[in-house]
Image (tube, rainbow, N blue to C red):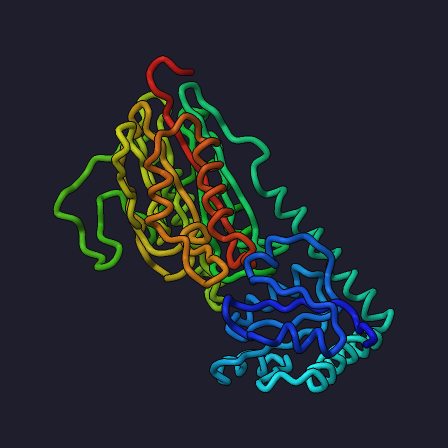
Length: 412
């Protein structure tokens, strides 16, 4: 029989029994593989693909993208016919039992012809427009990377490192670290703008600029009564805390100025656009390890003590730019020698594997609680754990991490 080309059959164990033989009988050179193995393989693309319909539409898209993009694709099931419905709504053809060679050949060739027609109908003008869009996105990514610090401050006795991995060409996450109060304090920020894509990236640039500018200026803050609070006021109820605290004055103003000022500007000028950012802004005194921070609705960073215990730093206010007229409270903690602060965006615990399971906080904390030698080593460990868990799944969200470590006594 004439061989019609190579065909990849992606199926779960015990499923679609007999289909490989039927496809071979139809004239195809068939390779049968598991979904995870396909995504881990770097072999060349087949002429067509048949996938077990138990895979999700996202997994199907991931397989096709991994194999090179525009490929003839069918889904098949010998179980519940309802499994094919999510794929049919995306315009993907389906095959149900009985798997007869002539029928399979007709369906596969129909899918191949559709891809040929679709590909052939792409005009040079469309190709040029696509190239222009890709170039614009690359320019946007290059500009965005310019907003991230090339180097991080490393005060004596401290070790600071960060990781940033966007899920798309441009991202809504950002991080920053810089000296404050004429070098007497070090500020560091990890933030996540809501949504994804170009819009989030634009507001990422705006919010990052507002925060950095506010933190490095000593200006009058007459509006602070409306947006910032030094007394421990509860940002949910608006009622004053019964325990008044005298916060250190050095750096307190710039810290509140940065967060509350950015939030006020956003709600005054961009509330209708609906963009806001969860943000953790910490400020350390390098001499004694004192930490002041504002957590604007962000995932609580974790201070991992030298003995392996953990202290979380919960929100002290809402997301930046989400609600007008809110107050932010300053939190306090201290990094002793050998302690490490780990800040991250939700792309870490919400990373998904090929089955749609979350990485989760439990896995993340287990990696944090192991002994730490360097900040970069800690981030490498978490990054490796994410890679091993996610494997070939398509990235869903940006991933940003920062580690701020106070070195043990005797280390410099």
